Length: 92
Image (cartoon, rainbow, N blue to C red; front, side, top):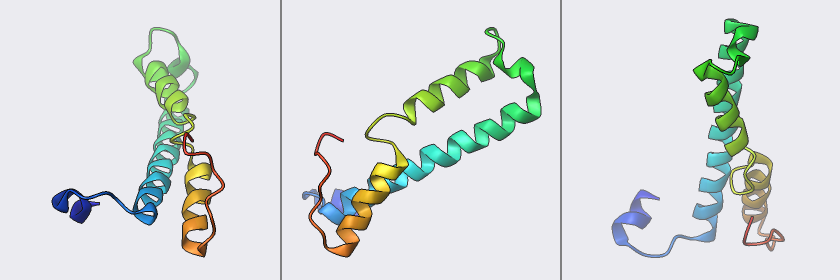
């Protein structure tokens, strides 16, 4: 992506889908880290006045967005690596 940004040209399909898969991985691992933190903090983490509850809720909600879901990004990148036509809708 750095070289694409430096030359200011369009990104390739492989590059775009790799970034999409990477974003999904970051979302999954970030949510897993938050889950560990909340488990260590205990049930009080989910109190409405606890900022961890808001962070956990926001992170998990955003991680379920169609453009961020890891499985979708992994599938799209796998199709590119295998040389298959992408069957995913461009909106997802």
